[in-house]
Length: 111
Image (cartoon, rainbow, N blue to C red; front, side, top):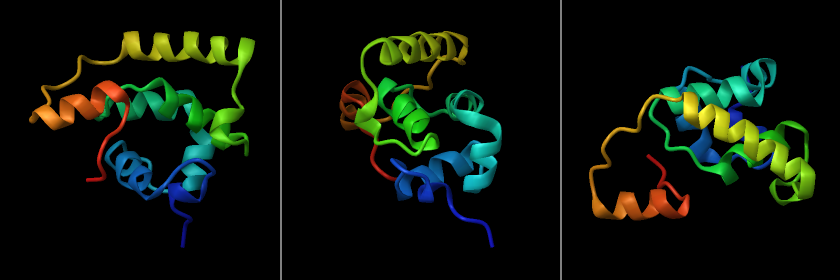
């Protein structure tokens, strides 16, 4: 049996569902394809882009705490995130006002 995505540091149970929608069903697959390819798949599957989520993924794959990212490293990750976001398909319409608010502040409820 494969380990779920949520065994990776900084990723919780909601990540399992999000990554599964993107075709990534286990932690080893996520490790194998890497943060950028995985995040690209998340965006293509309809996940709203959020910088903190992106760098938490990058840090988690390195075995580091999500808030360990600072300074020049964080700036470089922001440039990578912005490039991924720019290449992503346009977001789909959010169905409720609450979801729009949660998207704006970078939080999505578990599905």
